[in-house]
Image 1 (cartoon, rainbow, N blue to C red):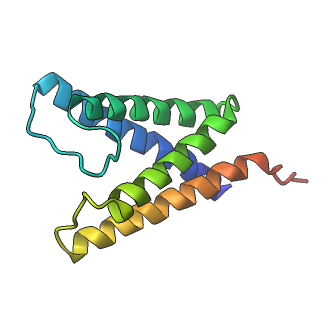
Image 2: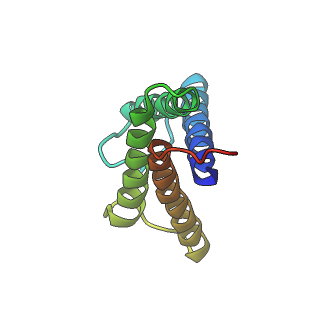
Length: 130
């Protein structure tokens, strides 16, 4: 149950963060941002991709808590884990600026893996209390 709650919380917070960053950059009109960790999106398409991912994260967490559309949470947590691993560790474009940054990203990627495992736990029946 704790892992399932962590999955909901991780998806909600990641969705809020991605949406917030995207909206602030869109509203501010800045053009000097750089998202090397997003493998397929460049320029303004990256902002829209972040916004869509953020909205999907928020929606997947809320809908999973309500017991509706549970596979969306599984898909979102899996996609976020894949994007973390590929974008930060496998992609030849992104470079770490120090050991601390690499450790932080490794912990966040590990948390994304835990969120994916927690999203799968929503399919196991809960224990009945006597």
